[in-house]
Amino acid sequence: MSDLSDLYQEVILDHNRRPRNFRALESATHRAEGYNPLCGDRLNLYVQVDGDVITDVAFQGTGCAISKASASLMTDAVKGHTVGEARELFERFHHVVTTPPDQPVEDLGKLSVLAGVREFPVRVKCASLAWHTLKAALAREQRASTE
Amino acid sequence: MTPSAATAANDARTSFDVETVRRDFPILSERVHGKRLVYLDSANTSQKPQSVLDAMDDYYRHANANIHRATHLLSERATALYEGARAKAAAFINAPDPRTIVLTKGTTDGINLVAQSYGRSVLRDGDEILITWLEHHSNIVPWQLLCEQTGARLRVAAINDAGEVELEQYSALLSPRTKIVAIGHVSNALGTINPIGEMIERAHGAGAVVLVDGAQAVPHFAVDVQSLDCDFYAFSSHKMFGPTGVGVLYGRPSLLDAMPPYQGGGDMIASVTFERTEYNVVPYKFEAGTPNIAGVAGFGAAIDYLSSIDRRGALAHEDDVLAYATERVSEIPNATIFGNARHKAGVLSFVLEGVHPHDAGTILDSEGVAVRTGQHCAQPIMDRFGITATIRASLAIYNTRDEIDVLVRALERVRGVFA
Image 1 (cartoon, helix red, strand yellow):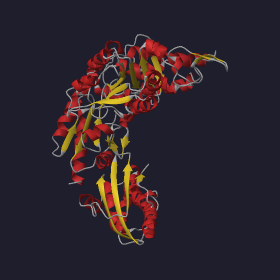
Image 2 (cartoon, each protein chain N blue to C red):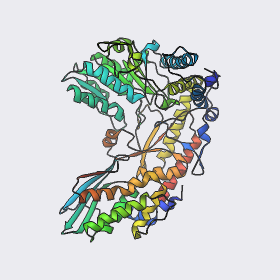
Image 3 (cartoon, rainbow over the protein chains, first blue to last red):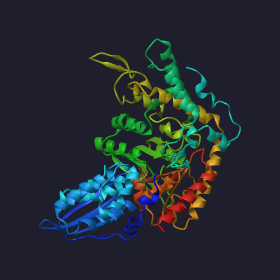
Image 4 (tube, rainbow over the protein chains, first blue to last red):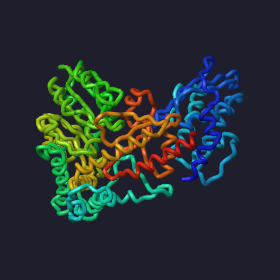
């Protein structure tokens, strides 16, 4: 196993302690519930889309540090972007966290702190739960599951 | 069959010595992430002694053939191993006769067998099935399926804050409508030992048939199905130092005889024509298809192994390690233990405030400590205590106080990361 500090980087611990956009969003035009049956973690995601732009995004729920930090970082990353850009970012993020650790991956800026989960295969679902939930919300599906 | 399979375990020990026991389990010398393995996940599945590994290997090397069928020597050896394990299982739980032992895939399979064979032929609309809040999903969902099929209703006896069944409420839920009571002997999530002798007596008083899920009991202490007077008792090999994919369903002979087959296939029939099939006798009626023969051979060796150790001594040792673990974890400032029943076996379930159990599990793993984190297939218990998951350290005969010290040091590391 690689060093734990690759997984629990300060950015992740910070977003776990003080998650950004951690609230309900009554005006949301899209919402979905994400569920990880392995650990029971649940996440409610709220997305406000005006025209084609994600003008606000927020989440609530319970989860481990990885899933909470990932959701928090995601909300920062997609806010102000178009739905198409968010979908594209989902694909790029998904590629980063599922590529074997010995292979290079693109730099996704702040989101790259989550690349550490590649060393911990059972934790990949924690990092991707929020993103699957975002994808489901944008597709107007009510539920997303990591299974 | 070559006889070496169980001989390692045959020298009866007069008193329990944990270091001797540890040497019987090769995997305990394994290193994980460069650390000594501290295996605290035996309620999930236990490790296997050398004699069990040998028994399965010997079977494939010297006895591999199908059972109950062929006239050749290997088939005789395989059949002797298979039926020998059944007889050992009967003696292990003091069943009156090997005929009362149905060999299954595991506890879940046994419970589903009772639900679908006994339950489906007996239950009617408006009947009730009573379980407790402590049940594993495998002792909930088969009954929910049965309720959907028959119109019966599932009732659930509550537990108190210590994680003990509320006996008065349990009794109040028993009525002439209660046809089946299904209760765990020991809770996998909290470790509570239920007073099942009394619970069985009360259920019988209401005229119900009682199934006991014994998966978490048999690894820890001796079980006597005749003195318990239960109607069904299901357990798994893999939680009692045997291989996965094998289990036992004990059934009261009069009930087993009257029950229809569970699955159709080879070995469960006496004669087959396209017009009519006669079923084989109990227990073969419930054992369709070629079973997990190697696994059953290993299961037989696991029973021999448990029979060779001083089980009272082993239980006293486990209780000592559990008490020590409870004390040490209680001392951690942000730890809360769930499940403080007066009678417990082998399980310490807890949370660290401010740390999700999943994160703790990853950090503990990096220190070589294997625990389970999550809902433990017992979501209603988590809901009862308003939590989503716990860290569960579960013990077997081979764990030591030293290992608890390693756990506690690793938990300090967890606290350090999330400080």
